Image (cartoon, rainbow, N blue to C red):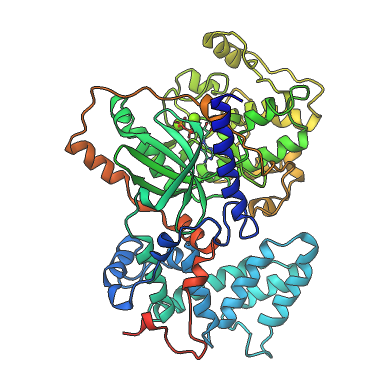
Length: 557
Ligand code: ADP
Ligand code: MG
Ligand code: MG
């Protein structure tokens, strides 16, 4: 074995071992403490209640309530943030009057994610417990007659859920923020807001190469969670005018929270680099799986292609609901995790449309994927992403693009002409349903193209092969993927094949650059940070309450 091969074996085994350490715990990069660094773990300590004034003020400033200057946003603090949500639910559980509402909320959420076969039974249980005024301990008196009637007559719990949320928001928040559970929430926010630097992470092998630096597997030392660390060399960024793009990617990723898009957990800087710490996707990208796994059988069976396509649709829908045009959907940018679920990655070409703006311009994307209206230099909207979805589905099935073969020597001008003028042709690998969906997505006129309408992909989700997918369960991550990557395989190039960067010369970093780097390096991103703390068991270790109902020491003033 040559030195490069040996290097890869050594790098792979450390990385595969780190992944293995985490199995048995949460799995999938979670884990129950395997691979933690004891010293860094000890730094995750909740502050004393007397040190919370500043964080309390920051929470109010960052997440103001739309209705009161002295309360934080219910949505943010009790619903969106996972730790906030846990502590709020605990508050409800321990409260005599609010408890039934808390239980009803939980039951309605469970119902939403249940399999069809269980729904009837679960629905009847909710009606028996929370809609019967002869059971005063669990009856939810705030429900309207109409909401209870909808549940009894039609098995529809949407109104009950909406009324419960409304009740909790308007009646419990003021009391909650005066309770010990909210102080505990502030203790965790304090921890979350601590400055983050490279000492919190250790690097494993390189996973891929980006335009401004390597992407490495890394581990959060304090919790043991594995991530991907996308590094952007500061001088290279400056030399090639990469500041704006780097910031766009960071700002967009930190805003999005979807299981179908890689999530950003930390943004920090080291001496030489800006770092984006993201969901690690160990299973490789779709291009690799289409072409390089089995040379004799390239391309996926339809069912597999449509499973990925459905997850991509969920990702696109989330982007578009957040006013973001992706512009660079292609198999290479869709990555698999340990379980075989996929997420969209590389949002460097994405663009956010301002409130009230509904069209954008600009040449961006990958030849062979870009929609006709974009190629013609016209203004366009989210619909360009459904054209690229059509190209991507076609390629997953045929192992060849509709307008361009892989490796074909063809000028971009000719590819452009084909996209503008030619119709794709479909082999016998496409069923009639599948062909219909591809055609609807590859429609040249954006106004006629299948896609995002009135705030959702509702129509697309009912089209062709998509119609057979249980979207509720897919959205909740409950459908089994058609293929599970091997946990011992590293789906990345050998370390010595990734390719090195040349050194950057003649660039000086001045105060203005440093100011930009500081503004980029905002530390932990709340929702993913809280997920990490819960998933790795740290939340449970720290969220202790004396059994006799007294206050924990660190909450005694
Ligand atoms: P750039 O925007 O500079 O092209 P990318 O975001 O595409 O950078 O990342 C470069 C490469 O790093 C990808 O092609 C992929 O191989 C790898 N990579 C990127 N993000 C992840 C991730 N979250 N998990 C695993 N590998 C990744
Ligand atoms: Mg890339
Ligand atoms: Mg990019």
